[in-house]
Image (cartoon, rainbow, N blue to C red; front, side, top):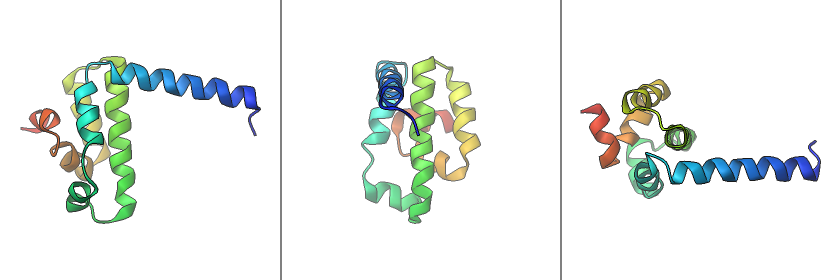
Length: 100
């Protein structure tokens, strides 16, 4: 079990990475993904276990934004998450273009 100091250090690092993601290249896409309603997500994936894919998609886009990766690389990472992730990404106008 981590000490309080280790936990706080890890938390600071997570917050730093999140900040970098929200000011990065794909900040708008992150905001649009986070803005999807539960109904929109359920229309793609009514199975609650598939919500993990939605969470993974957000993590991938955040990381891509933080690291300033190319659109082609982001597309590849999303495709690696599977068909559900691609379907969710297509609900976001600025990501849908990657799959046109």
